Image (cartoon, rainbow, N blue to C red; front, top):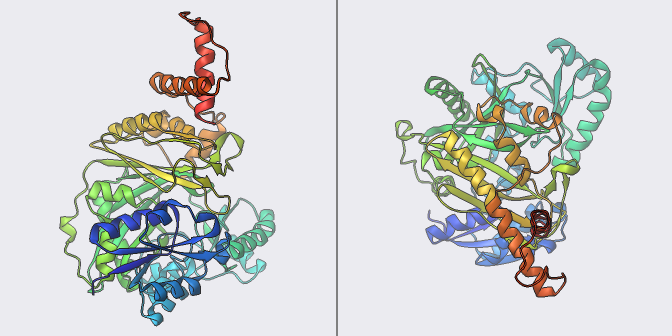
Length: 505
């Protein structure tokens, strides 16, 4: 089967990413949108667009019934779910199958086997994979949680079985913290994922978070496409990802990759997926969970393998066998991705919705930006505040860091607050440069001082200042320093500071 039209059941940069892949293949695209996304970039770039409903995700992007109605109305052959929303919803995947619309992802059966964190732990046991000690089924009571915690020993992690992104997750250091954490985690999980199922696992002290990208077709072939290092996290939410990991060599990569493939084959998994591990300092790895979808951080894998994962997803969904063998997968160079958010690192990372009044985007050798916004767009407060993903690729990790810093110096987002300064701070940190990172690294860095935005290069500051000066002149809002006069050093510094404030306004 060759798809003629694909509906993208998502929004923002991932919807635009899938649209671009479809356009390269000559496949027509159908966008869906909520009321606040009517003028969103993914809508403007699509071939067709249909309204879902009000801004709330529960009334729009999570309405699988409405999405299937639109798929039928528009004549779409398939639905690509992106990530988040319905991407790991087995009931929706099953509904697509019943409706005769291809779901570009794993089967509902495989999703149920691996999408739930508790069932995935059971599958890991069946595949003979090492995993963190803890429960393999949802906890039905606080007393059961106490018993499991006492058996595996504190500290423990309480997690939502259906979730991710740190929602419904709590670290519990001692028994007296369990009651409040249990109730809060279940409530948060119910709100975020529609299920209050939680489980407990032993907390591994200061591990690295390393994940393996897998890809399987519908003919029994399954490959691993290398690893991604995702240890730079804030409150269990990834901030920076890179490929390959600086501490994973060929032998460890093979062991982790083969374990991930074994798990996928045990569950009958097809399409793209990710198996996540915790890695200790002795190179022992422990199964963490499986993401049965395309990951936010997939671009770093694409850059170091030279593969297009969205094209491969579509190939698999069309029923084509993989044209690659494991020995064909070669990792070249290094890629690092920054998740750019509309949030204020200087104010407890509080979301910063609003109108983007100025947008200067970076470019040049080795720079890729997957972006879902434009100048003049108003970032809504109803969804995850990700604006874009900025990725640098280079022959070495050191050069990738240098390129990413250069790109950050070129990047200006005005009208809202964002976390670009946080990335400058991380990339300039000696610990990050030496790859001395773990899942608690960013917390330690932030606790060591305020997350004040790093200074941009003099060239960028001058450009911002000149732009601000022109803006001031056009509005006749400032007094002249006098024809032919030269500003003093103090006046120059004030001018640059004013330019910076105007550029970021």
